[in-house]
Image (cartoon, rainbow, N blue to C red):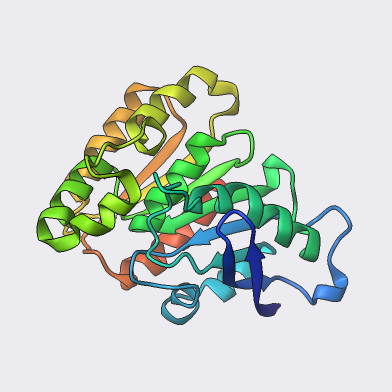
Length: 254
């Protein structure tokens, strides 16, 4: 296993982006077909190091023989903003292209996965549902699933200016940022629907909205697994859940 740390210039963001990559073997030994890869997103307020310092993701990646890419996404909102900061486009298109070329990460759908926790879980679901032709599976742990309610609540708690910078003064949520609408859309293309692993603790303040989203996925016949535990919004649960998520969406033999 090798841990790589670096920076790349993002044309769509217009700035340098830091990243960590776990490679399951020495980088001189990568297979010609490309490593299977999990793009793993952090929560708001965290950074590219959060998964490394607060979970055992290095060991899980090594056991699975899968590369894990952890970009530093700043505030971690995972949206293409109204005023041009294309964070989602960076995650879905530019990051896989640039790191894939450098590290021979797989481009094939069956070997490409996305995951995240909290707001990163929201970003992961959005990536998978917006681009089911790119991602075979998604791990969403304690995710924000009702973005409109989340924006309204946090705006009232003092974050109005930040959200206006994302969605404009009226805080109008685009259809592509609404997970319920995206789930409706992807259910129409069930032959390429990504497999979703959804997990949330019963003590988590996001638990009720996760249950509602689970029920919506079920009503739309989206392929998903839901697991819950007697836990809150905390890393002790997330470290366990990422293992279960990898087992659920990544075929054995990777």
